[in-house]
Image (tube, rainbow, N blue to C red; front, side, top):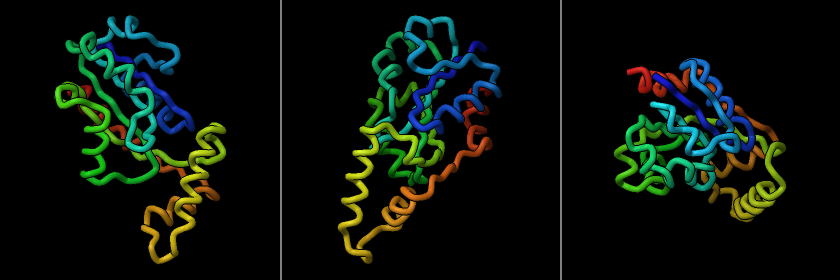
Length: 175
């Protein structure tokens, strides 16, 4: 099977998973900036990975805007984020990024990534600082566990990536 892995990664977590997946599947791998939809025609299986930003998958429009050209291919999308997601959270991500029709054709996976404030772009740092201030103005007892964890991450980068997290994707592709 001819497989390609494409990724868009701002801080490196999606890239790390993409590299592991490509290696395990002996697949070609491209940063999203180095691929066009026309180059994907030669592949039977297309795997796309991007970071999660407010339930939006970074760069996924390459896939969703071109589903008519990908309908005869096995399409997998994974996203990475710092938080463990609940089933409701996963459904929110699916529903925000894919139409009901696309959900029938795209197999979606969530892989826990990490957070490193120092690797963010200046624009993303501004957004994250605004979020930090919004959280900090709450009273300590009103903070959720996630909000407390988020505040701690600004000082101490975390990496929750584990190679075993790709096992479900590898099994899905090879089955």
